[in-house]
Length: 503
Image 1 (cartoon, rainbow, N blue to C red):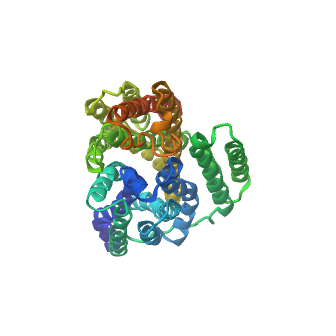
Image 2 (cartoon, rainbow, N blue to C red):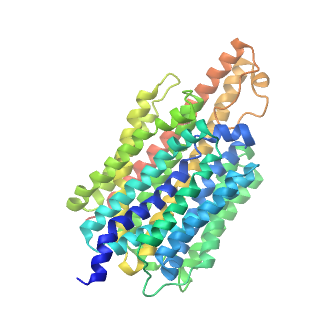
Image 3 (spheres, helix red, strand yellow):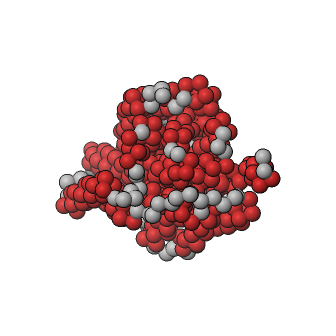
């Protein structure tokens, strides 16, 4: 072993720790504003659709750009890409912290997604190149998966702390010191690597994918307010279909496509990527609904709500660790399918929620779902990364990241829209039965966040009846959302059993 290789191996744990710090920040930013939405609504008064864009804009831009930035990572160097992406996140976080309108917050969240798209492919690519040994690589990927989930699921806790002691703006300010610290550590501890033959970025593919996904998510988010059959929504759905169809045609003919043909021919890559995407769809959409339920129905403060999401993050870390022995013995198929079945069972149990349910039922759901998601995250990532050649590690990382973020953005959009639609319909019907619709709704029902309607100006007896109607309507909508998540994860388990056959 040469002195240079020996030195690199000594630095490997420190390099992985630096990469995981940046990754934790990325995961945290996905959800840190979830529990801050009520505080942000009191300050900037966003509509329900704008609130979804604030949550979704980050993951949407990240998912739309990350496949193309994988080529950028290979070309300019993984460490440089990691550092530049984090620096961009820090810069646009300042814009978000100083925002005076919901639109500026949405733009800042999109800018953070662009920064994350630049540095996230570098995370797995650096790990893949640091650990050519399969056993050590699996351990590092399991740690990567656990940190990614930990960041996402502890985001609400950090957001709750920041809101209670400062305001929703602190959810942006916190990014600046963390990102700059990770940049400094990367310069000192992470070795620079590049691909021997880097492909040119697929600019056309990036534009088509970003435009198609953004149009699709816009249609889903705006449909509850504008009407699912309204002209703008219909046009947006049609346009997204045309754009995504054009993307598929371009990918089949481009000289350097974002998705090379070997990716689509490999069952392990496709199976792992689909499992990751639809698991993110289910869990991130459910987490968006969960934080609203904890505050607007169960009455917890932002910090109390955030703390009550922690059991899921602990269970997810346990699931990622449990995946290791299963991977060594059964490869990816068993842990992926088992994890999806556990998640489906958890969401099915969640459909049993009533207006009188307490935190006990929810705790069981979080533990079982977290365990399942941890299994899928570690095993699905291993399926993708082990099937991609070492010199295309950034492509594998970008594909892994893109599927997660596209699934997350669609999960928040679809489940948030289902929640808003069912909640609005059920609440209007209950208020009509009570003959209170005009008194209880100073603004159109469904304009604000589901469950957030105020009853302060109503007489006590009327206010109590309206508050009960709000809680019941929200729980009715939650049950439908949980059923959607259960069906999606069950169908994905069946597909994964076929795609991830033992090699």
